[in-house]
Image 1 (cartoon, rainbow, N blue to C red):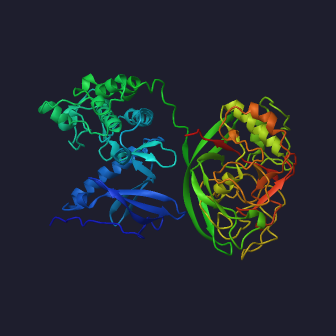
Image 2 (cartoon, one colour; image 1 turned 60 degrees about the horizontal axis):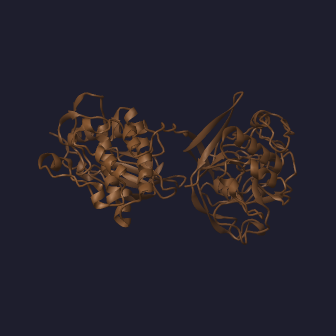
Length: 587
């Protein structure tokens, strides 16, 4: 007897993959899939896509298994296409026989919603989206894949930075250049080229190009183009975009129509070729500089006993400084958090607790090491000399210490000039946001600290925690083999870390935009690559400067995420080091 598959619907609070993810709601659905929202143990939100009930209904187990194989293949196809403008797939999970594709959760609107709410887009905004999605499609096509369902509904704009992201690869298929192939005729009216209405035909990058041009038609006019089969069979002409929006220049009008040619041979044969007609994409897109890394995230209870250990993922950029020395910079996503300590915790200078919004930036995975310091110290001098070996405790992988705030500014400036990036000290707000990584407890590991997980004076305790060891020296960066949820190591203890800000004895009047709080009120260093004009001024700063994170010498109370300290900018000590950040371009 043929066995029928019984449809599965996941419910809120349902746990997947042995509790790794918890369903929090239903995000939406399409013709093939349903998408749920879920959180992992750290509280990070993900989107998880499954086959919807329509695809599960009236299917034998064999038929449903075949569908799920195709579904998993979609995940594998997506995983091959790692790009900032393509939705990222992390893994596939299974629960109750139903497979789920775990993806990044993109907060924002799709382009269809945006046009419906606001009308046709400006020339600048629409072409910026074409450039971003065009770069994503170039990567897709280089893998000999076609998306086959590009449309405004399948392009999201991130709320954080308004960048475009291509989603929903449910119709993606392999293709071979120049060969006639058979594909399913699944398609979206108005956006599918004529070859997608036929079971036999030549498919290639020009297939997706038609849909991309149709999408631009919609973005600039607020209208859908006439379906290709109506134009072909009923001879209904396609209105020029300028008929709907006279503000469209002639050259853009012509480029859109060229991409919407019915005959595939008459269209540009690659996305790059079409983008040139729009005046963009004339130079090859830079490869994505980010790589993904995994790390351990540890949580402890009030007594300091480990209660969970999970795997986290983050993006990083690795820069080769020469002589076998590299820098690892972790992407810190933007967000809003409560800065400072709540009632009942901390000191008066950590108050009032206040809401701060942080833009995305990059931050060092570890405090700067002695090997990194020595290499950058060998770069050309800009304002002051740097001692290549300033540290009291010696070791290539030990954090550099005995460095002043001025030393760190010179270090960042030399590195910026060498790499043409804007390396800098983080603002105090950025430091605390990155240290907390979404947590609200005194430490990112929980309510107390333990010397099994951090380097501080273990003769003292915090809360209900137990005493530990007092090492009386620094430890190698990453020694404890766990990070916070953003992927940053050694946040609590080891060495104090300089911040850009001037010292203020409370947060009254503090900025809420994440920029450094300077009495000089000059924050251009957050974005400008040319440090040289700013260096002469900054070395005239005499105000006390911020330190964060505590050190090997400190009691645990001083190592909390909210704890603040200050010193003269010329002060050096054997428990003071730093880690730096990189500004991302203005958006």
